[in-house]
Length: 131
Image (cartoon, rainbow, N blue to C red; front, top):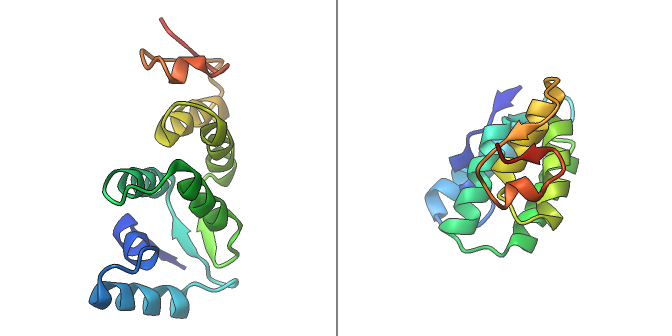
C-alpha cells in the first residue's frame, strides 16, 4: 500500500501540468490496485476540497462528485471512511466547509456529544452548537 498526498491527487484530477500529471498517472495506475489500494488521509480530502474550490474554482457540485468517486473507487482507501462519507453528505447540502463537517463527525466518532464552534455556517448542523 502507498499513501497519496494532496498534490498527487491535484495533478491526477485536473491534468494541468503535463510532466507532473504524467508522473501522478503512472503512480496511481501502477501502484493503486484493489489488492493494494492507495491510502488517502482525511486531511488530504480536506486539502483537496480547499485547492479545487480555491485555486481551481471548481463548483461545489463538482467537488462533491470528485469526493464521491474517490470514496467508491476500490483502488483507493480513505482513512476514516465513515467520517469522510458522513462529512460529505453534510457538505453536499450544508453551508459549511467540508473540513468543518469532518471535524464534527470525527468528534462524534470519538464519543463527543456535540462540537462547539463560532462558525455560524457550521452551527446550523445538528451536531454543532455555538458556546
